Image (cartoon, rainbow, N blue to C red; front, side, top):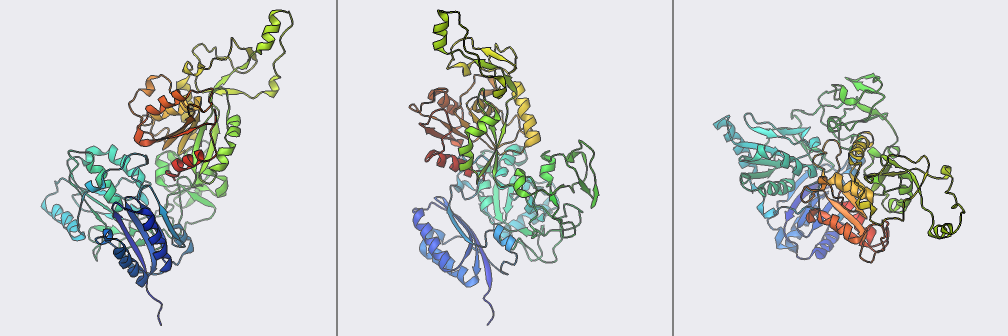
Length: 598
């Protein structure tokens, strides 16, 4: 008796789910009983599913889902028969070695600013059948080379490398994004290329087009005519050339005699097979490397990382398949070849190859990288599976301040005895700051200085000088130690991070990051903060009114929160003083925020 046919099922459905817990129970019971493997994502707004198993089991699942709830009666189930997973590595990466069912906030993450309000999905572009999609391209192409139709590819760069539409006389826009959450930023930056056009969008399964088309239409007048359809190929490929990338163990689909449009990153020969799962050493995006060029001793650098200047200086260059030594100080971008790789280093030793978030940490006033690392050790331990902290010193070195105790001041007023001496300098670590007081004399920590008077609890409000130097310092850090996913600032470091986030668009290309975490933060009264609601996703962690933070007042942190767009900011108020709390429920709020960027 022949083995039963295997298949893959893809579908999504945007709908208001009345009882999410009941739906979760249904999927656990049904998929487990049918031995289905893959990914199931559920939210209060719908479902997104990619599962594999015996064809008969997949058909039973479809019928059971329709019987469970009438919401799914008109769902477009995409069922295809195929071979079972042959490559364990590919199957594991695609999630086809287990069943993963999760409740999520978003079925797809439209924006790298995930806390922004999602567009109204009911305002998505009009659906076209595969035939209508093809006819629109065919007729427009025949009628006139001058037309108002554009094709917008909603897929990622690694997908379009191996297959895309090519229609003479019709502009095809390939955003070349690393991930779908970058697409909204591309749309924002290219509005003039879309405004007033009939926009025909395509992707693989449909769900990305659904959300992206709604986002375009939400921009109002001039963006109304958006049409979408998931990519279905005609027997001869139609206007689509190459292969269609899919997010399961099949890797790609398409006729065997399709033109190969992909090329090997190393030798530039025609190649379109991702089964080796080679990835960029920096951003982890898939890259194409043919069998002849694959080598365990090398790591690869994708074209996006090269263009963005993310590549560090190398000790070896491979150009046109031949090994050459790079000149001292030469950077990758100085060479014309796209075929570059880095020497192999153990994955665990190179944070840039990790899937964790890389977070740049800015210490507070009169602290340093070492002391801040010690203060956040508990936080780093709690987040070790999702984040890696990078600590740096601020650029302004401070003098050692010695304040005579009040008790000694009283005694010395009545006697000639000198006050007790300060501690030996060799026992003191240097202290730094991001901002300085206007009367700072520029002296560093080479000797002790006696404080002019008692500690001023509001001194941080007057420390505003030195911003330009600190920004230049951070630009160098991003260039030499980046990339970073986000910035975490504490106290004065939070004020610095806030200023950077307010200037995020202006600093794009020099300091790229997705979010900020502002702990015991406050806003400095500087013109850089006067930019309207700050759109950068932010998490604000500070003591509540009874939180015992004696350095930064609760109201000062709340005023900082008010400067951010409420749709993309979160708050964790605690009762733990001038620290970053690591116990529940506070750590849970921190994990939830960071988890949105993984």
